[in-house]
Amino acid sequence: MKKDKISDFTLRITQSNRSALVVVIYDMTIEYINEAIEYYEKDEIEEFLDATKKARSCVYELMSVLDTKYPIAIELMPLYLYMNKLLIRSIIKRKPQDFEAIRRMLQGLLEAFTEVAKKDDSPVLMGNTQQVYAGLTYGKGSLTESFSNQGSNRGFRV
Image 1: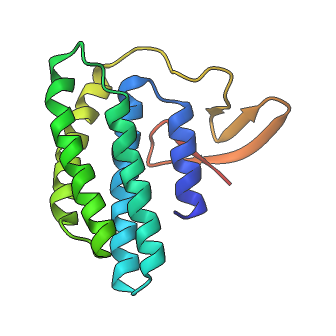
Image 2: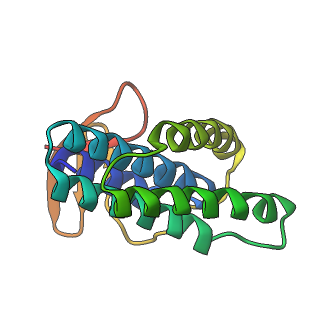
C-alpha cells in the first residue's frame, strides 16, 4: 500500500469509534484486494501473495472483534469464514480466485456499516492522538500542514 493510503487509513483509525473502525477495516480489505489484483495482472506473484495475506489479516481482524451478544455478529461470522477460505484458496493457487465475489460481499457490508457509523455518536476509541483542525495537524510538540478530503473531517498529512 502506498504511503498516502497508509497515512489516510492511520488518520481515520485514530479518529474512529467502534462503528467507524469497522468501516475503515472494510475499506482496507477492499484496497488490499484491489492491490492484489493489480499485482497479479503485472505477474508480480510475491506482491500479489503479500497483498492477499494482508486482506486475509483484515478479514481475521473483523472476525476477532465480533461481539456475539448481538445477533448480527453470529450471522457475520460464517460470511467472514467464507471470505477467509476464499482468500486462503487464492494464496494456495497463487491466483485471485473469487476476488470479485469477496469484493461484492465487502462492498455490501461497507455500505451497511457506513450507514450504521453515521448514526453512532459514541466516543473515539483512541485517546491522546493528533487532532486535525482547519488544515493543520496538532500533535504533542508538533504542527503539520494538512488538507481536507472532499470536505470531510478527515485530513491528510503533507
